[in-house]
Image 1 (cartoon, rainbow, N blue to C red):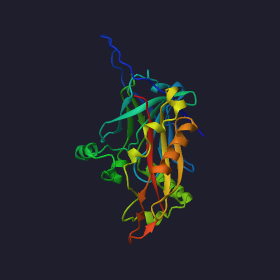
Image 2: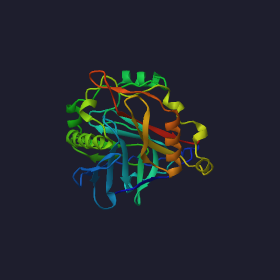
Image 3: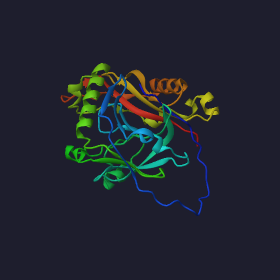
Image 4: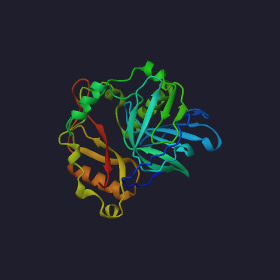
Amino acid sequence: MLKITVRAIALISIIASSSSQAAQPPLRLKQSSPWHVDFADDRCRLMRKFGEGDQIVYAIFDRYGPGEHFRMTIAGKPVRTSGLKVEATIQFGPDEGDQQLPFYPGTLGELPALVFQSQTRVAPPSPAEQVLIDSRKDDESFDVAPIEPEREAAIKYLTIGKPLRRDLILETGPMRKPLVTLGECIDNMMISWGIDVERHKTLSRPVEPMTSPGKWVVSSDYPSKMLYAGQSAIVEFRMIVSDDGSPASCHIQSTTRPKEFDKAVCGSLMKRARFKPALDADGKPLASYYRNTVRFAIP
């Protein structure tokens, strides 16, 4: 299994040079492997290789639960960056809009990588949806409209622009079938958690937090050893929620840093997280799950 590591970066100010390099044409890479889906207990991974030789690039899409969102990693020598910029511009072309995604510079094996911090999907929210997302409170959720299958099938490539010195175009081909396969993997993963997948397809209410998730892990929970070392982290977690709404268990699905962060997250969540249980189509409570992400960062 490929292991992704992330290195912490410091935010600094620099003075831009008045000289600039002439713009280079995009580096366009054709697919050099089929799509591969890897099933694990805590995530499903869709991966493909592009290019050859020193231009090999891997595109990795990790999904930790049902839905359209995924966390993306792009790795290969063409994505080497200085680490000074913490947002990248991506686009699933030719029809979908640009997205600005925060990332950490990291490595995949010995290859430089862009490890994106936030989850995304192949299409960004509409302008109206983005206004609602930006205006919501910490304890409010907002679901964007589903992406039509035709839009996923119309995708031809993925472009990664800034902060790369040279735009990178990965010729993915249509994304509909690979994403359907990734969804099937997620169904199998949920069955392994003990979740009734069929009843979950027609929920009248998903699990709902009774208090703001932003208050479940607080600044005093930052592991002191990691704080003094200047270590940041992204921790994906999953909680199994009983049919009475109580948290039955906490499990770390993905982490970019040492186990000290994992212990801090699950210890805090089991102590503070409380829920309204999920309800099936008939309004009956059932055991379900809650997923979210904790980001540890030093200002």
